[in-house]
Picture 1 (tube, one colour):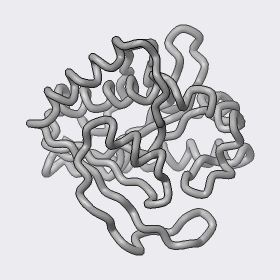
Picture 2 (cartoon, helix red, strand yellow):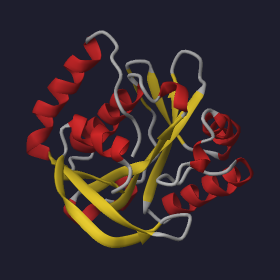
Picture 3 (cartoon, rainbow, N blue to C red):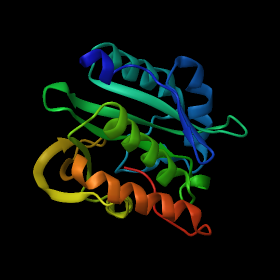
Length: 206
């Protein structure tokens, strides 16, 4: 069970490809983070340029322990790295994964990329891994992330107060969301319809 949830898999649709993260993606991630100097954002954990290799190494160590399944988010046409995302807090016994460690280059944050990537991740979780639930968590100050998660159709479960440390040492409250397997068909249809509509601004990241 654990190996299935942590098995590296390529996922692709709607111009976006999720490639199992490797150290070879580090230069692309460094360039993506530099698009907007994302490491300066207080409510994310985007690595500084000099920390990118260590960031990837930590993700791969977590994957080896069955705790995380990380992907590089790549433009399918150009193979340009746009950001990264992961399954994490994997609980095989209840068939639960959370989607997080997600960030994108600023230039694609108001595009189809987030919806396409999340649709791929949810489809893999529910249709392939037969998950009962997919979860998300985000900093209470990260309003863009909360809007993006809510646009996906996730249910807001509540707020964990004084839950975790931010990179700057301050203590954050964490907003928790979830989507159940039974809710997935309606969410999938709505997201697929959205991707067929003319491009419109939409928040991205969590």
